[in-house]
Image (cartoon, rainbow, N blue to C red; front, side, top):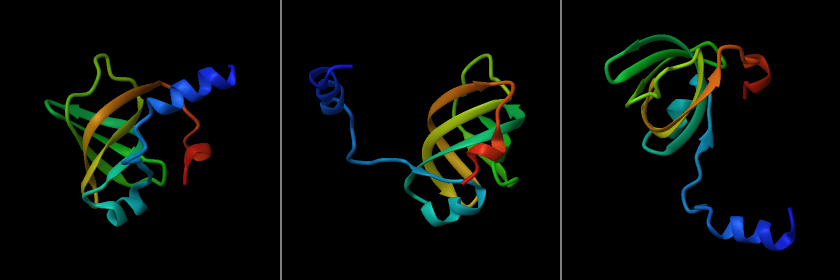
Length: 104
């Protein structure tokens, strides 16, 4: 990528409110703020997904997940409390993922 192309891409990025990378244990320190995490989906209901964070904590993610939903998803959203996130963006990471390598 040329420097001009890189600068063009950078100017379109919103860096005013970056998402903090969190696991289940760190989520409580970011309540009310934008966060980013990966979960292993354990259950999916209408409007919410339950899953295990990279450090083994149970989290609830509220919102509309992609269909079909894979076993591992990255979620960007607002931490509602110490164990739930209101999702703004979901990204399927597939059905196999190196959780220990992603742990914070």
